[in-house]
Amino acid sequence: MSSMTKAHSSPAHTAPAKHPPGLAYLSFTEVWERFSFYGMQALLVLYMVDHALQPEQAQGIWGLDGLRNGLEAVFGPLSTQAFASQIFGLYTGFVYFTPVFGGMLGDRVLGQRRTVVLGALLLALGHTLMAFEAAFLVALVVLVVGCGCLKGNISAQVGQLYPKGDPRRSHAFSLFNLAINIGGFAAPLICGTLGETLGWAWGFGAAAVGMLIGLGVYLAGGRHMPPDTVRSRRSDPARPTLQPGDRR
Image (cartoon, rainbow, N blue to C red):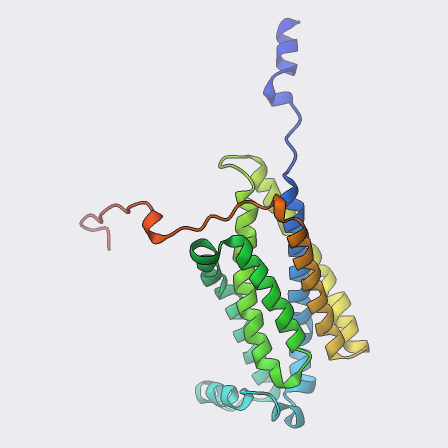
């Protein structure tokens, strides 16, 4: 009987510790960031094919002729649909490439928190600029830089909420990924509907509002966020000298 009592009182039978409050704030921020991203993405190709790349509108977009000439020098003559697909592909590719540099900016210069705030502001600005036809390509560049600043740093902060080896960390990332899916599911329904029924500016504006809400959630949870860890190259541990054959 005494052994059974000890077994029930052992740490293995205690209730699991709760997640820190910062996880909820980071997850809800990510919901709105993904809402803004996928909301705009749901409209992007349709907007280009049906409106922005039509001859009467295309001539007013800053830098569009130069971009088209550069792409056609590589791929040959492009139809409106093909040109829209090339722009979409470049935009999407850079969105997933720039977090490498955004992570370096957060790790070595600004810190993760300030870099996330900078990214959120740039995303809101980019979605707002999408409502102005002349600034279409500028808006895409701003969105790419904003995604680069925010995406990698907010994910890193989820891991920083927990000490190394904490079993809650994997569950925390599962909840964080659930937030990504919620935002990605709702965005095309809302932004797409607004874009088709009320006009392109309404759909892009909804994405901008969503990102501002996400920024507000993030700032509201500031005291629950992990502290910034800005590293310099001098603080990095010394790397071992390569031995013969290591380079190969």
